Amino acid sequence: MSKQHVVEIGECLASIAYQNGFFLETVWEQGENKGLRDLRHNPYELVPGDVVFIPDKRGKEEECGTNAQHLFVRKGVPEKLRLRMTRDNQPRSNEPYTLIIDGVEFKGVTGADGTIEQSLMPDAKQCRLLIGEGPEEYEIQLRQLQPATEEIGLRARLSNLGYLDAGAADPDSVKQAIRAFQEAHKLAATGSADAGTLEKLKEQHGS
Image (cartoon, rainbow, N blue to C red):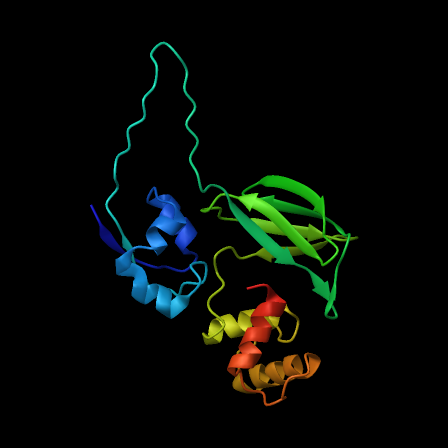
């Protein structure tokens, strides 16, 4: 039967829909979720405490011949993890990397613009990135990114782009980081996260 799901830390609509046996689009486009769509715009950037309407499941019949094997493929799985690696605002292009997702290794080379793209299950839990000589190691927090309009989402993007020290949350540090970002991208250096700054921040961050 239908239900209301309260979003918890580490969830996005893809993982919620998958765990309930639905495609992301099926849940996102429910009329009961219009208010959530208007508020968040992006199903991958929900905030803990948001409420998602989960509809009833509907059965589907398929005609199959007897005495034969039949393959059924579930659509909408897997999801895509997309990263863009930079250093000093320049893309880290053509660098070897290893992604370890729930214990499984995936090797590759970053794209010309520093991008990494990898398929993964919607409810994947752990992800680690090894990149470059050494190599450098990063823990990737899956489904943790909140909207840029939220303070935590703003700080996360500034930190990921190298403008703010990880964990720094005091207002002065955040304001200085915003101003540095604005100066780097030829925006009015006000130190305030106005609409234009947020749009450029999401563009540079990739989401």
